[in-house]
Amino acid sequence: SQKIEQNSEALNIQEGKTATLTCNYTNYSPAYLQWYRQDPGRGPVFLLLIRENEKEKRKERLKVTFDTTLKQSLFHITASQPADSATYLCALRRLTYGGSQGNLIFGKGTKLSVKP
Amino acid sequence: ETGVTQTPRHLVMGMTNKKSLKCEQHLGHNAMYWYKQSAKKPLELMFVYNFKEQTENNSVPSRFSPECPNSSHLFLHLHTLQPEDSALYLCASSQDPTGYDTIYFGEGSWLTVV
Image (cartoon, rainbow over all chains, first blue to last red; front, side, top):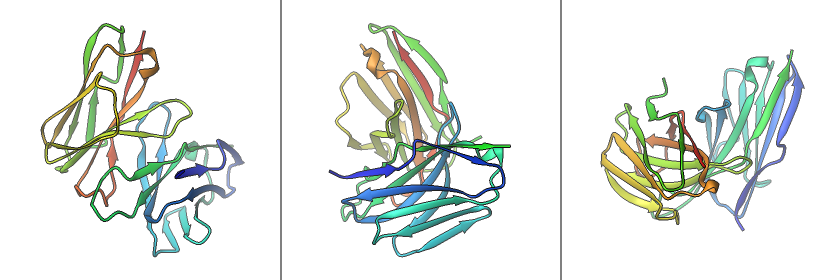
């Protein structure tokens, strides 16, 4: 079956360290992959999008990599801060040829806690 | 302010009640979505509307009835729900109706069915 796995339900790190979150997928031909941040009781907020022909994307302290051979995306937060504590979701958009919109598939998320 | 506004933020309803969730997007987008988020589960797509027309129903039970009167507004009508329907219901929108685009979420409506 097709699925996306975010390997850790929770990740605890010390302030100032780099947080690395993993998203693996099986049986997809991805068009692109997105990362979202979700705070408790709030809706997800878009952070970064990386396309299947891109290896790496950066935005301020955030970096995303995409390895279609390994079927894996890594999401890094450098110089992490307690304010980065949240749940991070990855979502994969499959390649389709009919234009259907039902193909953004989400992982369960990884809850990141950054300790001062 | 996310550009997608959902009301109410919290709703408690009995299994025999009828209620509605409302969503409004202020982004000029053409596509709107309903997602369900339950504890320990991934976001589940429920419905998709493009230019007011429903283009996807992801095998959602008929006790959930969507309505899209225009490209800016989306409703989810609820009737005879079950306790397992308790969840966070998220509305979202995107510019590109083909879906190859970032989607923007509202803050969600917390639904508790008692």
